[in-house]
Image (tube, rainbow over all chains, first blue to last red; front, side, top):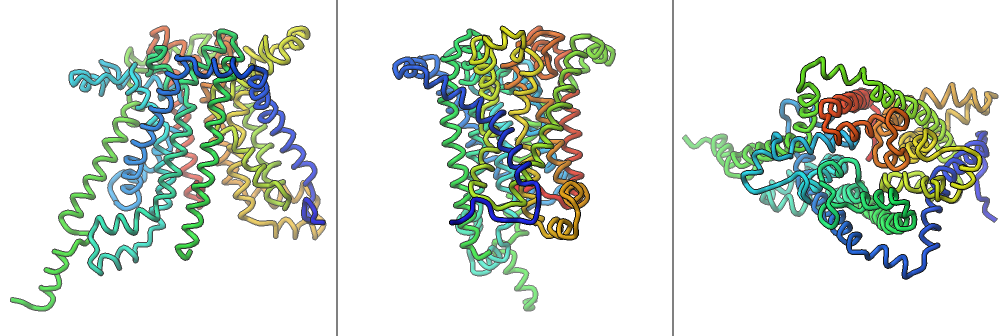
Length: 279
Length: 289
């Protein structure tokens, strides 16, 4: 019979493994189980009633719609930024490269109030968009802007290493053989970068769906219009409607798991392609 | 004069090479688009924090920090980080040692579980503790009878922050320790060193940059966490208000100078985090995304 753990001369397995699993169970698994069990204590009808409430449906539409849009914007601009940082030399490149991680490090409340003041109708950018009939702050556009900011580093940081791995000699060879710029991009660069781009897209989307802090300041929080699902959960909790909150949280949790699975599959796909490419 | 060299240059000029006019146009378009996108979305908000914080002058800015509620918020944020970050670090080492030094079944499942909090919405991270320890939660009655408060008090804030931040150190240490291998530790043990000596004298120096990296990321998240803490804190001024929550309160009271002044502190923390991160990367330690 194969042993569960292979023997080693190193000590401390019991201590470290025990502490890891105990801590993980106490901090993560037990509390998450509480959420699942709280939802399970509802009847099917009650559960369906809560999660298909028009206000809940309105919040999913905004949360998922804006997250999808933001992740798509990031897929395009994140790729352009990654390309610029990898391929071109220009003054300030290193500093901009370091600042890409800013949305990771910046507390969401700070980016929330800062974006709101920039895009409000008297803000630096908002005042030029207002005459064009574009209202950003306190509309779904503002929600999308906030979700774009917090998702941006995921795409750039996923695509950057992949772009660095594109074999320049292949591009040169294709060019020598008469391939055009777009052809090289489509047949050599895109296939190499695609898994990373999709991973970045999914990570940005997953992060955006659950985002709370940077959105609530800019969104205006009108029920059915500019209310995201996480905010609706907070409102339910403040009403002491724990079951209602748990049911909505359960829906979001299931979706997060699906996203996590997708990310893992995409990364496995990327690795297979990487190995198949002869590395 | 049609020398061979001349015709070669001529041919290169018409070939879609890297230095053609079109190449230059594409290059500058990409750089411009990138910079405009980042300027609107990132640089303008960062600059606005400073401008708004100083909009009534430096004395109004500084006055914010003499407000007792602001000081209480700063103190609470520091206390939370001082508890959470060391615990995260110990957990990171325990998980790193167990996962990187030993082969056992279910290892990748364990790694997935450690990453779990990163996939969960911050609001849910706070809510699960309310379901357990809130007034109408599972242990709510028990806690009330014994006069213990977790939700709307410091323990709840610490628990929620710990949930959100604990993968950061572990995620740095696990792949780094796996990559560095066990040879040196095995040599030390075989030569008669004890487990703790081996850890402090062999393992710790090897992983110091990854450790620093994980600690600063974990600290930045711990001090800046908003959603999870917002759900469990109850927003009691001067008592359970952390800095991010205090920003929200000041902002909703239209005290913009105060809100942006507190925000500027957190922004400086973020900038300091990025500087340390860049310095660590310069030592050759590179995070694998």
